[in-house]
Image 1 (spheres, each protein chain N blue to C red):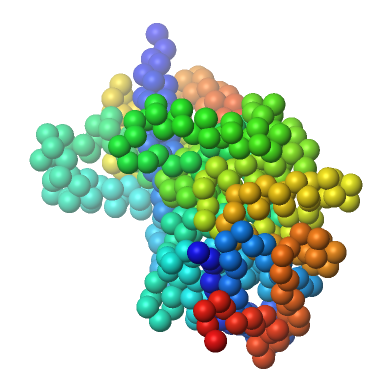
Image 2: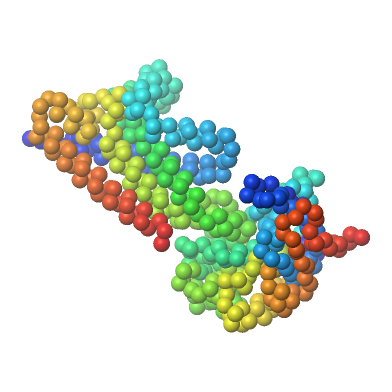
Length: 239
Length: 220
């Protein structure tokens, strides 16, 4: 059970001096936290966005727990909605007009044969559970703009867990936090992620952050390049 | 005795057309939101055309479309609504067509200002496009949508050319306030004209103030 990705993406933009080429191949095991380390503009976030279905690579494949999320040869491209890949945005992207608990519950869909009431009750129960786990239970009726950056991150994480993703992608999760908060949250976040136990990819430009947080690190260098990047690790099961 | 019928007829046309245009403009703006390329330009041009065409030209087209032998005229006749032209419904149709581009463009602008990450967050969380539209996009775009509504209301309240073409000037039936002003002035009845001018200026000021108010709330 793992996340497996092979991506090739070429962007020709008049803004770019040279075409931007991203070539990446890697896999992440269940319960593993893979770090993608590189300077900004090196294609880290783009890699995550390809996996989540936000950007479409030109070639390659993404597989998650045996499901094909993307395969250019077989012309498979699941929409982001159906991928079950949780994405923690750098800005957290909390819905400003929803209270904390509504935010957390927003990704809990109605299952088949479930009545509206049963669904709402389950959503509330499930949201409360993750909010308690992340110590934000007392913020339920607040709005995102009324809580601190660290609290916002917890809300975004609770929302992520509540949507039951099969893989989690963290885009610079500590960039919006001050150093003190980063230390306090880091260890706990790691513990929570490991206990959830799905493949996790963390993207960062900070070496120390990645080495403390991740079980394995891949470096991305030379964001603006025409030759394949250093991001080449044999996937599990491939030679 | 001063006849208040034009006020009632104008308000009815403006309120009904604003309600129609609010829903239609918002939904169409959402549908066009993801369009790109040449197709988008063509659709965009068609949807905005009523804004730049002379109202009499619009009225002419409406007359052709809704006339006894026009496609919509025949369709409505089959649904049991005969003779839309020169009826009070015609005032609503004219007001709807001229104010649609204002609502559509306001809604489109408001949707474009939404942080794309919010929409992508919704998608990666498994929310349906409909749920994202209702629970994320509309609340985010709300001030812009309200500004568009106030703008289209003002525009339909002042509608003259297209209304004259398709609804005519039947006192007590299709005579709106702008119509009453024109015919009162033409007939030398300056007192009546002054009263209607005053009422329109007052209503327009209020709705423009509302527009500005909502516009100010757009960022904040």
